[in-house]
Image (cartoon, rainbow, N blue to C red; front, top):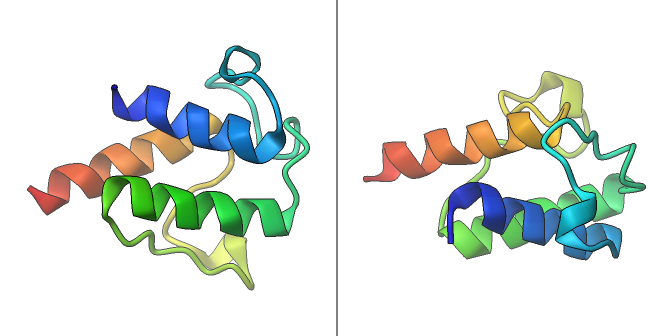
Length: 85
């Protein structure tokens, strides 16, 4: 499974949606994911990819990890996975 597909599946699960309902242009707000859902999504992503996401849950705007859209989250995960190799 590609990184993109796995991230979309995790986000869809948190939003209680079908993966087909999650697009790369979707924002977490569009999907109805609140701050708790965001934190749970980050934990699930970290576990799925065995990475540590540099995310500041108290102030997402100050984080190095862009959560503005599904595409930016996927790009960030791809970068972290590549750095791990």
